[in-house]
Length: 253
Ligand SMILES: C[S@@+](CC[C@H](N)C(=O)[O-])C[C@H]1O[C@@H](n2cnc3c(N)ncnc32)[C@H](O)[C@@H]1O
Image (cartoon, rainbow, N blue to C red):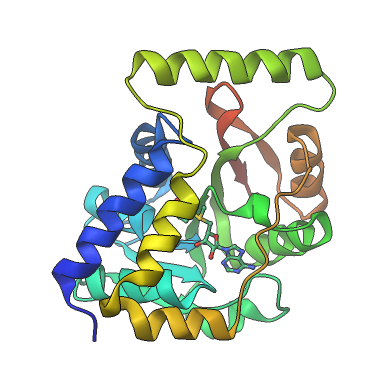
């Protein structure tokens, strides 16, 4: 088993790496936690985190709602290994290896009741439109009446390309003023360094045995709302936004 402090160091580096793409990443996490805390009508809500990676959002949600049970789902063995080593000892937090593109992925979550909130951040843009539609339907089926789906990601507006371009300029300005240095190599550098760390050799080998396609779908904001409606959500829209970076909430009746 990977040492907790080694895993924590790699997750810290992961968080810094992700922030080079997302200036307000921590604020986005807190907004998602605000929504979960608000809609939970019990001290021990059940929350599922889709594409949890090394568990950063899952841990923030549990920090905010300490009585919650948070189930992180991902299909990357290395990121799940880091999550389990860093956070696996925390009561209320567990991680499941499942591919959202495979029908039946909800069956392996071992959920004992309907879910209060499904959260996700910077993950679902990896899915193609048909996979995203199927995921939304699966999520709607997991939620209890009144439950919510909370998705933080970049959602571009294809109908207003000038505004989409302006959103990027505004986002770059906010990042610059916050002192965040944009670095297109941050992602590949993190992976290159992780793959070279002997502590992670076993996880690196597991990952190489089943690579995950890194998609970047072109499903725009309006199409996300349409897919959510088609999946059975009663209402959906943005509760927080910075440029194209939004927290989208969809609620079942
Ligand atoms: C950019 S990372 C974000 C991770 C984490 N949510 C965060 O914000 O730090 C995208 C995550 O989505 C996961 N992912 C992508 N496609 C997936 C799929 N089909 N099934 C499960 N996880 C998936 C990746 O493995 C990766 O951990």
